[in-house]
View 1 (cartoon, one colour):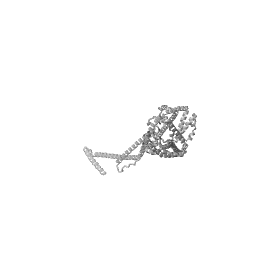
View 2 (tube, rainbow, N blue to C red):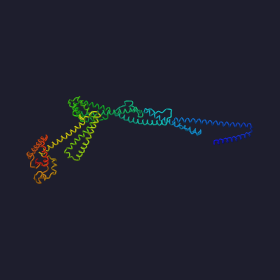
View 3 (cartoon, rainbow, N blue to C red):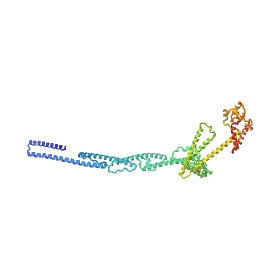
View 4 (cartoon, rainbow, N blue to C red):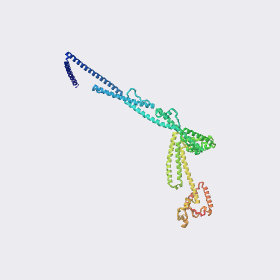
Length: 580
């Protein structure tokens, strides 16, 4: 098809050349140009045509050469960019013309060049951020070789690195702001001014100017810890000073008004307050030596309290001989103060054990008290469900006491294993101390039981002699209905009374019995003589109480026991005369 096109052009060119030459020859004929001149002119025209075609061929060959050079150039450029950007090499289609190939290579080169520029731009932006963040935190920048185009993986790694630095900087800045706030507050509380360049930088400079380096963050943490420890030390010191002052005030018997006046506007723990408290302690110490006896006696009371809290035995207490020294000197006062401090330290070292022991001791005493109430015969006289509440509380204590005792023993075993020494209570091991308490409790129960038997025996003897005592007040007895009918009273006393006379007879708590045998005090009673009868009753009771101080006779005890029941049912008192 290209050949047909070329032949068509040649035919057109020959046709055009033939037409043009014909026109020229006609013109030349008309002009009158001779033949040899026409021939020369025709040769000149031919020469012009040859030169024109020759120039055209040269120009086209030059164009082809330029296109070839550009193709080679773009090919090399694309190859270099692909290698630099670490992407696969570009291979153009071999069937394309030179112009199309040049166009494709030029477009590819432009796109790769643009990608390179974008990567370099991104690299510069990320490196600037990395440098800024590293300068702010004194870190080493991310390394990428200079003069090279970064790969996509390198840019991603750098971006991740920058993002991590941003997060770290933000974290450190928040930590700095938070700790700075705490440091400023602590410095205000402890009344402390900056003492170093670093403290000045923290407290006085703007937040954004602080260098968030690793060393600075460590130093910031150390400073905060130092201030917190200083605050705790000052709080402890102020607490100890106030405790010392209260102790001195108590021993000096300082009035509450004077104490309140001193305490006014003295809160906190600043150095100025510490100096004020030390001055007050010095003043009280001076007064203390002027009142040594009062101080020693007050410290002795306090020492006894700490002895009780530390469960000291009698032997341990007697080892402190200064307690019994009646010569009040500074040396004695100093010994008491040392003993008091030793007791406080001892209690502090064993505080957890003593608290557990106090808990067990409290439950043990509650059990004893509830057992005492349970054995009290008057406990049934209460109202409002109090008896039921006491019974529930007693059952709870009896249920919890063995568990608490077992927990206490287990904790003591662990403590002894950890510390490698025995835990002593009142100078003995815990098991022995607990056993002693239970033995003393059982002995006390037996002793109380014997005392109740003795009291009951004395009461029965008194009732055998003087009659039973009324169980209700006299005013209430006169207003109540007789507990037994007159007919029953006649049968019990084996006498014959009329209903009218029986109606006047009340229970044994009001009138005397109309039995055949009169009471022992009847022979000593003179009607109208109240003083003589009362003296005789008091005398007989005194003699009887002196007789019952010793253990009761077994025969007498069995006799009175059988007689008490009869006396409580059948013995009555006579109605006293109106004059009495």
